[in-house]
Length: 281
Image 1 (cartoon, rainbow, N blue to C red):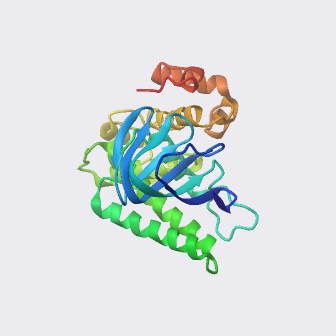
Image 2: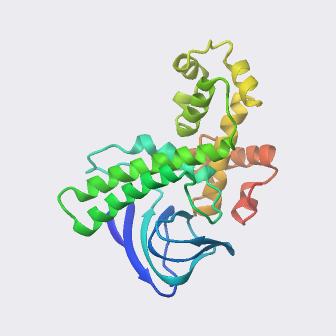
């Protein structure tokens, strides 16, 4: 792995037979199939891959690639600090951290293609080709170009995951769909999730906002926000080694006991159960 930046690394590797790779301290890994065929296996569930396949792999757990034809991979590994700007960064990526959390909290982690829509898949392929070119040629500002391209890729990934969450559901009120997207992509920013802020931004009377949200979402606004944060907490418990207290504080809960209580209330499982592998259904 070449550490292009202290929070992400890139590797191009060819295999005739899969070899286990060290992925310690990884947040997740984006995998692009440059050539070859075979199957991706996650937790012993298999899914076929071929050239131009795009996959997202979380940290740890059981995974491998069963190679039928010699395969060339592009691996882009992210760490938990990806969107924490460094002292020498030219761009502040912290505003994108909620989107990274959105991916972690809502991706199914089952094997399979990351993007279903062929047009959007082609778009991501073009962006990945830019990353591959910059990585191989290492021209001036190549790391900066790679960083910015990754931001665009993660934006497209978020949009696809959001569609899967809605499961084809459409809203007669298009403003409400925009509201849900805004909440999802700003789930870590409490200031932007206040009723007063959202009411003004989406032109809904503050006194009517709770009723407006419940009528369209079929659940209370605060429950929707809490459940969204709990999904992120579930992913962090499952796929990172972060202490439960740290997870609780970063997600806006008073402490780990508060987080555990809310998890049991909404999903009937405690954080320690989740960390041991009992994923929320």
